[in-house]
Length: 186
Image (cartoon, rainbow, N blue to C red):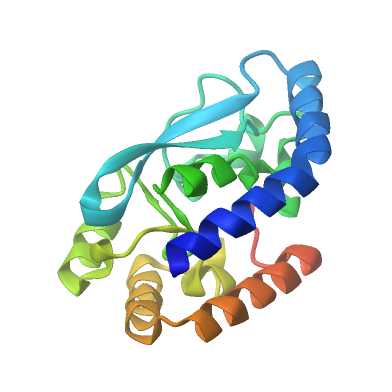
């Protein structure tokens, strides 16, 4: 049922967001050199690596690591990068990952391939059994601000509480957080 809802919602979202995505793509292209999309290696269900697209918000050549680990991450942002991240517009291409089945609308955010501590802790708690999401329980409870053990605890709580009603609640809370631009540090 969740997969069917993901497909229906993503098809609807793509039809509604096609024009805004085209505008964002154009802005990314004219504001900095390099490709419009950044494809990062992410950890999916069963720790399978998949390619996740985002609108590029960082300069070409920025190290592939969690943004908060960069020294002066603001120096790596493109001219429109901060806006894309604060508005979460950089996440829109992930609708493709939802259609492919690599991601869901709701689930733990997919870890970067090199976030070994996060991957190990999620695996130990069984969170790796869940399809990662565009948003999740940890996302709306701290996003960039959470230390890894707290993020994993929230991911584990999500795994235990999974339901359609809980997913809908997370989606609504996500919309609120995006509008308020809360918990985004870069």
